[in-house]
Amino acid sequence: MAPQVLRAQERTPAPWKNGGGVTTEVAARPEGAGTGDFLWRVSIADVAQSGPFSVFEGVDRIITVVDGPGMALTVDGTPHVISAPYEPFAFSGDSDTECELLGGPIVDFNVMVRRADVTARVRIVRDRVAVRPEAGTCVLAVVLEGAAALGRESVRLDRLDAALLTEGDADDIDVDGHLALVTVTDRGSD
Image 1 (cartoon, rainbow, N blue to C red):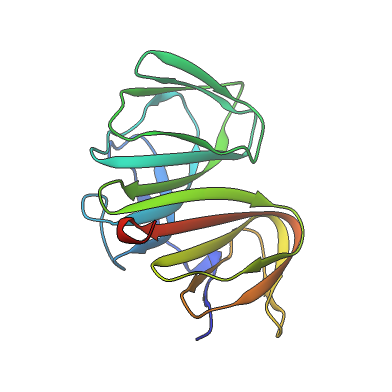
Image 2: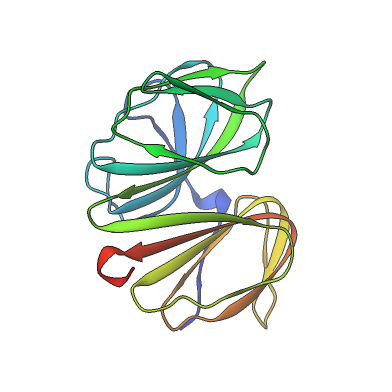
């Protein structure tokens, strides 16, 4: 099989669950799932103002600052400063979470998974990486900054483009910038 290439320019922004902003979905399973019935979901959000995060019961989240000065998250009363780009931060979607921007708008990268069904791991890569998903696993590669070349045919991925690799796909990705590798594993496989 060949990896599925997901181009940034083909995405449509949608309102946040709590109505406080806009997000652009990179990929979700099952395809076409909404915010209430996804198994896993990866998105990119432009955050222009401070405010509360939507609550997603039964969901684990991983958020990464891509652009901007960062944010201070207060998760169930505990503060966490996320000011450096490309450093994933994991927390529970069940938590009462407030966001305070640290000096201006940001762009963030979000991974959400139903914890009863799947797990996720986010790794930021800055050079060549071999991607070979095992049984029960898929890998979503998203260019956060710069560009990347996928596979032997060197399919170019520009900023915010993605490639979804599933079991049986095997490719090398040459990265010139920052690439997020999101590994999603079925609970029965981890």
